[in-house]
Length: 184
Image (cartoon, rainbow, N blue to C red; front, top):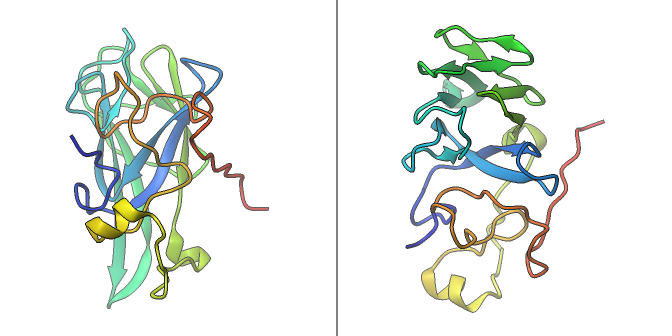
């Protein structure tokens, strides 16, 4: 089954990541897309956290890319607990069931044992754009008519659900790793 990290199976742009060392010190990460990003234990969740204190459908992180008269007006993100048993916190403050605004660098606690670092990426605000002259050298990507994904994106490891990346990028020496640090 193709991974939704590829444009032909998930056409929404990647707008950020959740990163955690709660399960393993090697780290794990999940891409975040424009629109709702469900968090929970259910196989249907985009951010699947297989831990006993995480509810099937625990929370939702919604990313909206707002337009104003055709111009980018910014990205708005909110987090909402969806009736979980063990709760959700944003920067150490327990959420009720109303949405709370999130910002890049926030810590989201899910259940009793997961802490997730939220990283928002706004390509427009930093001047990143698709390059029309880009020439792929990856034969399989060129045949499929799509650019290859490199860096943080790799195929899902064995035993993980498509659409989730729940292993460390450091476990497989063939994977490339991108280190992202806060802007100074």
